[in-house]
Image: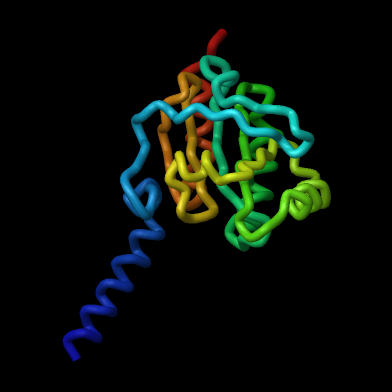
Length: 177
């Protein structure tokens, strides 16, 4: 009987935490957070083979790194919001780098998925999952927001409740003009 009550209390606490905006529940699960640290630099090929370097955005753009896979329902649910935000804020200095790898999918499957959905932001293929491991991505979807200096300001297993507002604040706070 006691275990049943305790289990119910834990489930209610977890559910409440998942609904609270900007709570600890919004933060990274599965290990220590990288928030406050400089984002590890990487260069990965996009789906055409062109190298894309995170370093090239430092001092210029607010960057969102997205860890995802074609078969991930949570990733698919986030795509419309990512696309809308990217289209609205890209010209103001916002960039999304969608990083995926051999996560139960082939490069060709990723190319077809991206083509079929006309994703407007760069999709990078991490062939050996090195960058995903470097960021400690053990769950997807994964989101990491960087300010223009490359410092990690948010890391989590989903888009924060105030996702667009956070990006707008980062863009306004670090406007290079």
